[in-house]
Length: 272
Image (cartoon, rainbow, N blue to C red):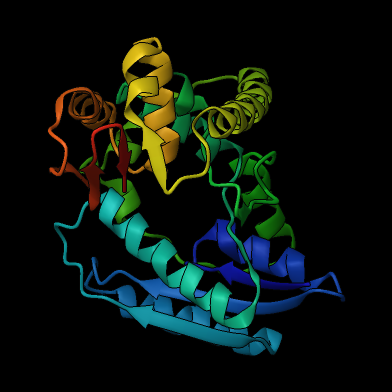
């Protein structure tokens, strides 16, 4: 199997890379995305390049000058765009070093933002995350035992980012509680998948969808339908406004829902 491993140079991804090189049947590609957020980010890229060379692996890197004011969301979006392009061109799967503490932090962030139950069903299914059951401290211990070198991201020490502020709070959660949250996460991901299957049976696979259906089923169900139809690109407030447009827009009109989503209306149907 061929894998594109996202390696930032931090301890998590360095450990992941070392672990995966120990599986002979894996064909590995090391991918590094330089956001251009920190002044010394080029040093990280050079470190990862040397790391890949030491393992005898192909190294693919891209730099974008997002700048120091770039948001976490933008940085994540551009990083995954790069990783998916590499994976498609090599017919490979993406592998990241997200671990148990990352999962807890992401759930906490989503719940704080008001994402509801979906905030528990985090992490995209098209990405392989073999360390998601492993706590951060265990990765650090592995790195020390195997004399691995890594780079520390200086932005982890600032409270300018929401994730860093959340991390100081989730660090006090017991290991047992994190395990329980991980189990709940698995249940919610399964529930999310089942809901999406039911929605597709209800609304069909397009390209057009019934305005009448979404106008007369319960609002909560209509919003779930719209979320699946728009591929999860819209926030809940955007979905609410989108539903109002489905109910009231004139035939022949186009509604711009946001995030590049446009709805075109006929008398009885709408399409994206």
